[in-house]
Image (cartoon, rainbow, N blue to C red; front, side, top):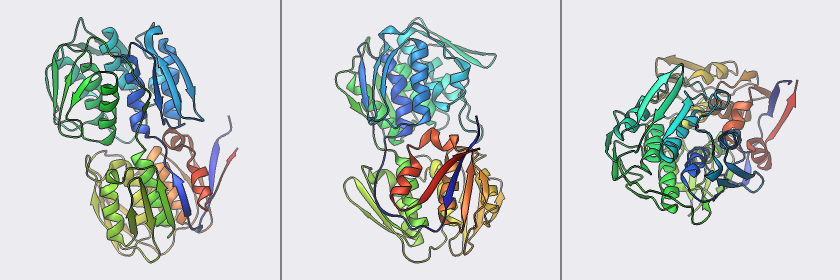
Length: 422
């Protein structure tokens, strides 16, 4: 198949109203959790992205009945027809969240065989904390030839102490604990919004979860769970942030609706610091920027700190700020690859281990660049919007993994973005 490229004509000011899609990071956790329900469940507000399509393929491979309407963002999952507990390599390698099928299948069927997950290459992403947590519940787990093999004759609630804050590890242990006898307590748990969303989804099926959004989560296991009503996942925090940054980058005036402003506080603080104007309502954020932007510095941290998934789009914006910005990446060690592509566009960047020093330049210039991962792709889109000329972005499949119709949304605000093959 001919390679697809995204073409961005830079210099267009973004202006208008745009609605944010459902959260990718919630979707890839809630969909595997549907395996836990004894009755069919309906999930709403799902984004039409590649990771959701891979999740549908995975459930159907396992034998589940899935009705997926990408236009409406609704999915019905009936896990009662599942006949397999093994995820194939060709599906697990497509996304990081394939590891969540370990916890879900282990809880529901007492066994799981899942190859080590794939996804974006942004550094080491071990699942040792996932395995440690499930072993604490009594699971027998080994890794053989790149496949995690988990078995249990009945999980027991226990205390799970995470050595480090891990979103994936927290989610996997939450899934496994839903059918464990007694109470499971996760200490040093992740606090991200999609952790809370998963807890709410489990609660809608009758599982008692307390403390989600704090560093201590308690789950009382149940013999069976049943979906009682349709469940709508939360808006996408990272898409919201990407659109906020795009507005500032083009000195635009964009109102983003259907979002949760409290999820964006770390980014909002930095945009205000650099001179943009941010106004919030109950479910909307307006970002305006007319003058020059000042340089800012930040460190990526676990929630509620500055999210690593927004580091790359934000660092693109910093390339044209007045002064010197410093960005410290504390989560993933290989998340500065996009900066080498931005140097091709005229950015002045130096990277020292986990710190990027960005000297602002007056103007970026169009070039042919390659996305190395999902959020790097978003960063290059931001750079293309700012650049003079027409930027070509290769490897657009990375962008499609996590953003629903990103170019259509930006075009509706005044951007000029198209795709071509070959």
